Length: 363
Image (cartoon, rainbow, N blue to C red; front, side, top):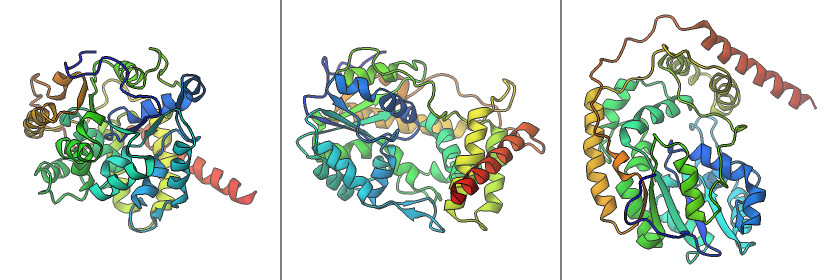
């Protein structure tokens, strides 16, 4: 893994420090959280606590942010006790502690200060994992579609790429998450630049994320490994995501988020992602060249500002602004027909989850 000269030589966490990993979304957060959760016992033997029993601290972070799950129609607030319990776990140990939730990157300055205060300002170090913006565009749009968005990719790009603070996008959280300069400035202004780390994740080195976390925390190399039993969060093919997008067009008006989340997200979409493997020739989502070019311009500006910020820098900084040729191929038309197994997997997942819920309710 290529590192910047500003990378620390030893473990970044001191004894009793709290590593607050705030994402951003789609930078390997699911994989690293699954790895941390699977290694809880081994972490404890090395003086590190990954609190709780869940894979991530997502629900606790939503409680801290007082954020509703899902859309307003049926979305629920997470009880404050979820966050209070996590804070209690952090305070009850003298170990190093790792807290990880990409939802926290959406915190306002006031919320961020409260989170740091709750976890003890003198202990918190903030870690922000970053990938190139051009890689984050399709993965973020897909994630929004998985939570109910029905806007087409091209239209979404046109609105989002107006830039931070100027977008009329129905997903304003995109720039809250991915204005990386503002994110680092916000958190370093609270905990200090010397206690803020920007970790540039290299897509070409999948194991680098785990090695980097071992190094940051002070674990023996190889402690954190991909969890083969973890829920997959692979990218969808263009055909797969189009089926879900069209389903969203009709579903959002007639069902609330709780039902959508239980049956479609945790049922149909999860079954599709976990149990279907698209053939090599199945159409992938294509980001038009104009959006890639604009993303690279934004990335060059952001990288200059981040390197000058005084925060710790780790990882392959050169991967943050790719300089390879931009694919000029036009976006293929949306398919009139899709593979039958896409519809089958979605439908089976929904039915399976519905039966599971019925059986649980009956007991």
